Image 1 (cartoon, rainbow, N blue to C red):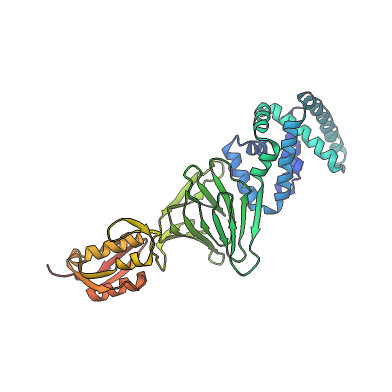
Image 2 (image 1 turned 90 degrees about the vertical axis):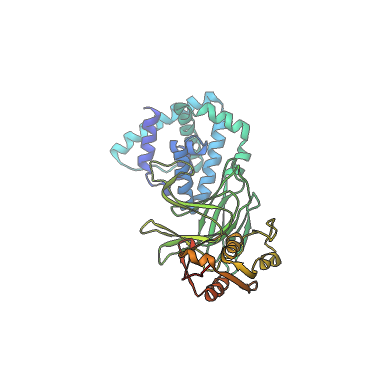
Length: 391
């Protein structure tokens, strides 16, 4: 009986991955391709499966340790011997099942060694053996386990809980939120898994994009700050951006999955924007936040980029007979929000006043009152309506 048949028997016995023990994962060819990062489809699948089954983390870690041990420590000669012994045992097991489908109880140690034999045979049969020996010899089992091991944090209190990740990114979990994250991020990417609401302050690293997986949504950033929360009653997820640029999209459909691959839906957000995603309709709606804040960096009056110093921002909102386009430009530069006028005659108007000690909404209200105009929010933009002024 070949390796494929042996694996088929094991898969028939344990079709539900939630019932898998470490040796079952170690004998699964798809899981091996995930472990050695050989197939992006398998990597994507197992990362999401682990995310959705945090109760199996201890089993996953044990499986990884077993794979590391079997692939690196055992001599090649023992692989074939163990495989032959395993094949004989499986053949005998099939004959026994034909009479009475009873699975005999084995000690954990016996099952672990049997799994090592399955694993080694799979590695040989699938051509993964030499790759795995080289990979593990370079990485070392301890180093590999340390990098790949997932940790879990849950905020069981009422106050926000701050977590510092290996890359110095900060995640603030709200009450009831849970985060799965690696002890150390692997080269090329940073991935975490979230349930509940959290605010992220991601360290900038253009060579290692940051991915947050939330149900079937992916939030992709390089370095920024943003918030994710869900309304379970409405089956709605909200992502709000404070700084930087964020891409939010659905995970690619099963069978067409690649690492970081987006589905047909998705949006790109900038500061003071948010997106509402409906899990029922699978639609995205990009909007402005209710209370826009000045950007982390905003042009000062001399157009030099400065930190968000209150005095520098306030100075932008003291006007003396300023043309309206100049006033609106100050809004766009400080808040990063695009403002349009419905009637070009509005651009003929001028504005004088000190609106430095107001928030965004109050500033817009004062300007519109002076101009006898109104404004409305359309998606991520603002539209000003009015009769305008004569030249």
